[in-house]
Length: 117
Image (cartoon, rainbow, N blue to C red; front, side, top):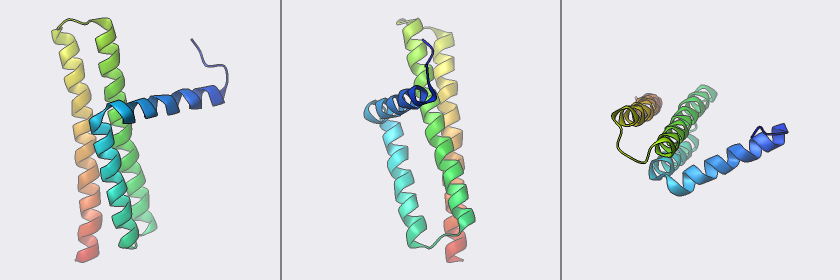
């Protein structure tokens, strides 16, 4: 069913994010890791560029985790039985999260290394 208003779309998006936070442990892990790095950024008096990079990589990893969750739910709805193609789709979705997670830690690592060198 199509959403009627922009506000309805936002409400649906927030519900999806709440669901992911409640049910997906990896989403929670990345959320709290991001919060930890935000606190470190504040304590180390990061620059505007550091915060921009933080926002980009943090939103990227959380979006990847949300997309992976959506892939998994659609795949499970299509077939409750084992299916090699569905397994591949889920693995590829997990690969997206992994790559974005690497990007997150690399960017934040560079930011913090430059603070101490």
